[in-house]
Image (tube, helix red, strand yellow):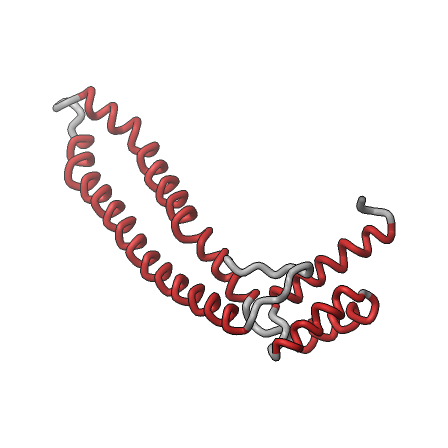
Length: 170
């Protein structure tokens, strides 16, 4: 997320938030297409591997006297090769699809409007801390509601401040 919420800086305008939200939504749609392509590629690799096993390896294993060294090698390494295909596919999927998807989901959630329940929590914090009340006034001056990412940022700030007041954090 290129847009960062910070209590020490002025809040971003609604146009910036909307642009970031739409960009994240477009990126998510592209990631879904990439996920389908990835799934097709992995299925093709598994199908090619299974076809090789059914057409070449299994007939050779049926008569081990034809090429005994090759049969022994294939019989020994086949489970490991199968395991490597699935481990490599899973690691690649995690790197290319899952991590970016989780980041985009977090960004999209952070750029959505806050709920009444979370808004009430921050309003209570604004009565105790002037910084939170000041940030809320800046948001009101911009004429937009608080976003979920701002609520989360403010709650983290309040928690850190409370820990400092209790002497738990320096």
